Length: 113
Length: 115
Image 1 (tube, chains in turn purple, green):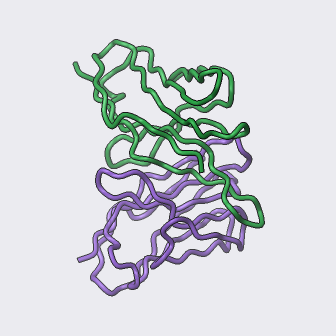
Image 2 (cartoon, one colour):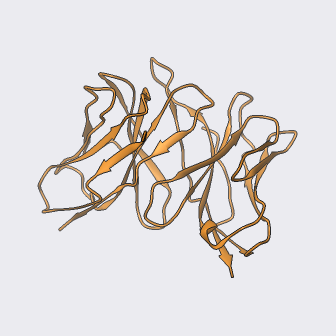
């Protein structure tokens, strides 16, 4: 089945360590996005990519990095520079164009201790 | 960016129609209105979108006012499984060489379906 997959669902890391969250899609979508969600809050855009080998900062990119070497994959690295990394992270993909909907993964809940 | 305003929470009785309002008074002429919902600890799910005309699909109906400054999402026969946070979003072009589009999520409306 086509879809977007995030792994793992739960992730624990020690403070000061970098951690990479996986996002894979087999929908042949050009655009991919990473969001962060804190308790009781809406989603905030971290990074997005419209095409392979290109990506742009969102509203809260500091302390994060991404790569887009393949169309299907858009991994997010939470670096030690991110001051408050514990959050729910959501990946999405979209075909492109103004009237196409985004498909979301089921999220990764990262806890830094 | 066009912003949206939604009530923070609403209740609806099971089996009744749930009507969720959204204000987007600064919407531009070529911007679409999208609705998503998020069940606790899951990824958001697309519901419906529209530009000017009213839209209906198997999940819901979307009514957009003639001046496009507000819209209403209608769940015709709400069930307990419709309890979720509902997000009204206006597509928001961002500055970049490629003319990227982003989704700006507010806090949404927490819809609670009562048995």
